[in-house]
Amino acid sequence: MDAYLYIKALHLVFVVSWFAGLLYIVRLFIYHVEALARPEPDRSILTAQFALMEKRLWYAITWPAMIIAAGCGLYMMVRIRAWEAAWFQLKAVFLLLLIGYHLYCGKIRKDLLAGRCALTSVQLRVWNEGATLLLFAIVFTAVLKSPSAAGKGMLGVAAFAAVSVAAMKMLRRKKN
Image (cartoon, rainbow, N blue to C red):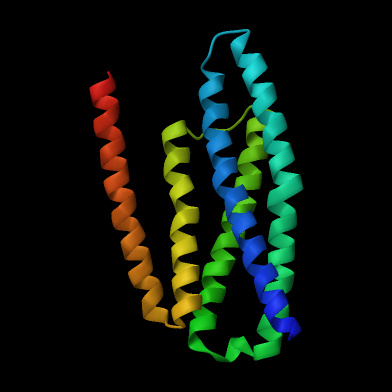
């Protein structure tokens, strides 16, 4: 069996792990920010627990998954000379945005630890949708090998996100 297919399978597994880490870490940030508004001793207990969970997720799953996914991706890129294709050039732009997203999540984590995170839980909920948009764009571009497919994928997820936000707001209004 060709090593390329094994590398491709590993790439997919670690991309899924990377995205799982990114999506979950922002969810932890939301809970962390909300815990800051709680009275003592709840605030101290919860924020310490969220900080520990964020650290473990960040360094045990999210960073290693990104590094392994990137290594496997680089192998495949070189092997098939992907940079020559227009679809891959667009995918590379999305990947750079994703790496920026990843690094900014690291900044948010550090800001939370230092007690200087200015983002609200609502802003973090919106931020969390960024990873989903990039996931759709990257997958549609890579699978369909078409730059226009990325736009269609992002439009679809944007519509889904808009419906989800509207539904969440309606549920919250009913709850209150």
